[in-house]
Amino acid sequence: MGFRRKVRKLLASACMLMMLGNTSAGEGITVESRNVSLPYGQISYPVIQGMTDEKLQDEINERIQADLKVSEAIDQMVLSQREGRSWKMEWTGGLLGNGVFSAKINIIRQQDGVFDQNEQYGCNIDMMTGHEIALEDLLTEEKARQATEEYLEYDVAPELSPHLLNAELVPLPETFLLEQTGITFLYPREKLSTLRNRAGEVKIGWNRLNDWLDMQENSIPERIGVSEMLELTEDSASKIRQMTKEGAFPDVPMRIGDRVKELTDQYQMLYDPDIYEGGRLFYLEGGCFRGVLLLTDYLSETWDESIVQGIRMDEGCAWGLVIGQTEQEQWRNVLGAPITTEQVDAEKAEAWRSETGERDYYQWDGHMLMLQSDESGKLCSMILME
Image 1 (tube, rainbow, N blue to C red):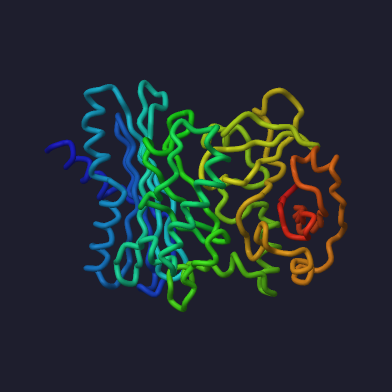
Image 2: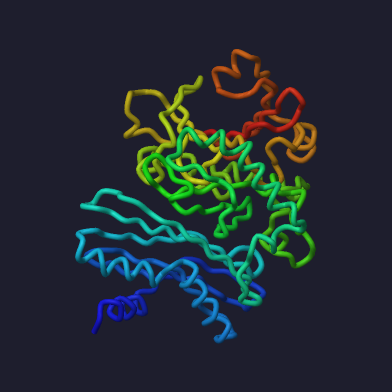
């Protein structure tokens, strides 16, 4: 039996349940992870199970494997046997809202146990039809693509370029990951890569694309719940309280209490930590951390024992709180009066690496939510603290 056939046989029997969900494509649909460990590589990719339409399910799973380059990764593992390399293939994502599947796969190559390079691919499928989701299915106007590229070129590129090996953010790549809070564009390594030669990605919050989003009934943005992230309503209050209690922003893979070293080992630092009034600020690599800072202590020169004491978001949206848009009066109307309000003058702004303005403090179940407005009264930063 050939190598590839052996791998496929192992994968067929190595299935681990990852996520449950109910969608209009059928009740009880699950996304499972096919996992197998080999001496020269680890393979993991998503598989849809539980659809009543088995033919559609087979078509979707074939599309997932094609988009995520599963066969190509297996071929690379054949070569790895001969070249002394090892590979790791891991995925994130799953079912979103009402009948939408989105995932990305990260294929990592190691040489003698040390990171060498990686590639990322995305897959987005309308579970109701089996069709692949394109950028045009999310936006209503042709000029939206041009406007997105201009935002990347003139706003994002200057922010990221000093920390990148390759920095061609335009034209937009065709592969991306969908989340309730935004879209992450996944670039080929030769177009966008970090100084450590990792394939780059850029996340754009839906608030940046709000003028062009297709929010009609049954549209993809509507089905994945984008409006919950962009519109501050009375229903938002319970979601914001729960977010604070959990100590984590939506779609950001860290929470208060996590170990800093584990996060820096997994995601790498974009650049060296900065100092703020209460300790250190960490900037991590990865689209999910764009505009998100990790706050911890400054008790020693190392951070082996440090934990995440706070998370700050300066870009994006969370349950109707939108950076650069939501006004202080709006969140006070929904959340009520803060327990205290602090003036952020120029000295304090410098100490916190923030803007001047006001900071409202809310507290639920031991965690603090700090909402800071700029001089115009609009939200410029939100911070979760222990």
